[in-house]
Length: 71
Image (tube, rainbow, N blue to C red):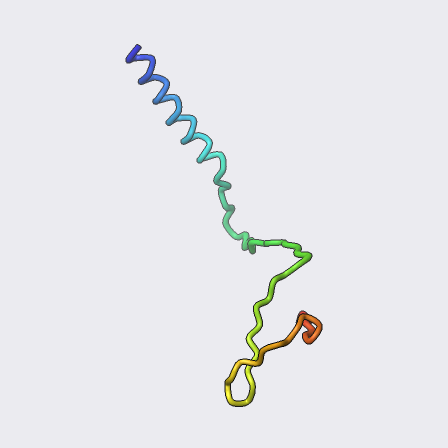
């Protein structure tokens, strides 16, 4: 029973090592790959703090009082 547990543990370690090695892609010399991240969002929460010319917070503003643009 003890030998079986030891072999199971050793097999699990070897499997984890093999999966780790397979997940790593070797990089070929001379290639400059730039990582690319693509994302889409339909709604973005934007926290806004509005202050007057004296630095006091302006209250009572609503969503329709703002226009948010990109770029």
